[in-house]
Image (cartoon, rainbow, N blue to C red):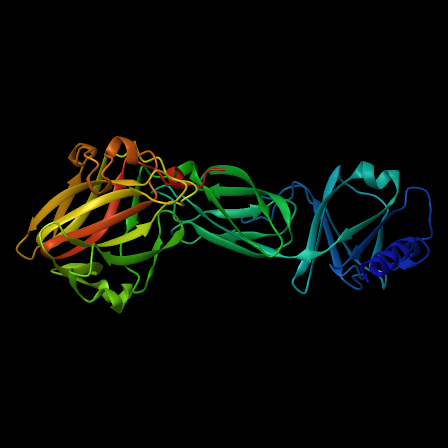
Length: 395
């Protein structure tokens, strides 16, 4: 069947030179550049619109701002063909979108002038999403795609999304206030591509704020969602809510004059036992180097002993942790807690404690533990001295 479709495509491409294409005779002449568009099943893409623009064109978001103005539109014939006689620019893009499929190519004036026949295959479209880190004085950014009319405005947190992009490595232009940043991003067929613009990133990252009421926490400063989990050292540890009630049951109103939500539970355990919340903040295959961290800061209230731990987990890593303790007795009021690397327990290899110097260079998860008899609330965990790019997946 595949051989038959390929044969039909070859015959159709040959037939293009003898057909009327987009209302223009395409009888083979010197310097005629004939393009045939076929779908993924190798059948001709008939009656689809093909748009061409200068490669440096960008859609204007304000008067007077755009690239070179060149635009042509073609419609394929019954064999999926159309002819380009010439280009008014040195290089142009070709874009086609139709029923969830598309293609995006670059053509040079030299290609067209030489005259030839070429076949392009449409593929499933993908999407592009990402985050632009905005300076304090900027409320949003513009995102433009060179060679297209794609233009989106980020939200106030710098997030944006573009759907229905044919597979291609696109050149992007980000306008952030008076600054311009350019970046390339490869979109794959049927996939979601994520890209971040770190040019204006802060030197701190809020890794947890507990505003979600379910298992997934969206880390706004990093632009991705993570799944939290609750566990304990053994079955002798009792928690309220119970561990089997699900992560969402541990998210409660912050209370005591604090807005929003917080993580809250009561833990009852024998000496040396604990229950804990944990979540991945870096992938197993790409641990984060957070050794430049100046401090971890959070807000807490309640009574008892808690700890903040960074861990290296995963079969591909040397597993271990580093942790710092804090004793709460806040009288019901919220307390700002700041822990520096020097506050983390020296390495003793007990319960996997490898110390700050080892673990900080390869962090995968963060966990918060409650020991013995403890009830507490915790909110807004911020790491100072690290940047969002420190969490980027390593190639």
